[in-house]
Length: 143
Image 1 (cartoon, rainbow, N blue to C red):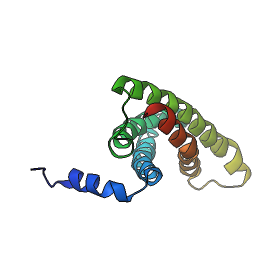
Image 2 (image 1 turned 60 degrees about the horizontal axis):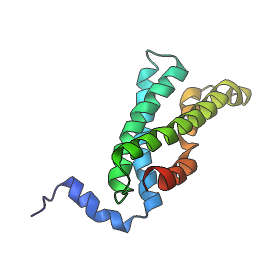
Image 3 (image 1 turned 120 degrees about the horizontal axis):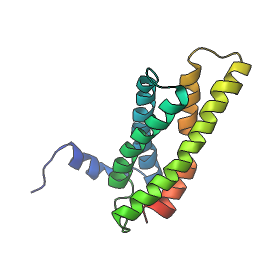
Image 4 (image 1 turned 60 degrees about the vertical axis):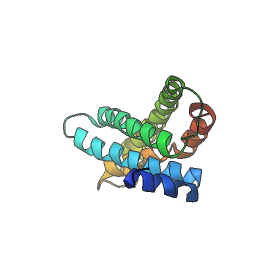
């Protein structure tokens, strides 16, 4: 008899949610970890360093959630999944960093936005690689 805990209820509901939607939901949780930890890390680190460290925390969260709830049927080995996941997310981190810094250092000051400029810039940076990451994970990471 299977336990009827929160995880089994989530697993039972998954077929009703499309794979891209599950990816976005898992990514939203990971992005929340990323964003929240960046805010806390910024208390002790420069903005760019906090972005990179927070991205690593978000990556760890994303790997677990995406592997468990989005691409559970993947047949390639765990070490292959991890290697591709890291490669894809290094590229995503670069996208995130470029977008975040461009917005924080150039676009938002030019537009006269100073209220929560780092938060706005980082949120936009986190959103930037959603499509490319989904395609790369589908075709490379979780085959």
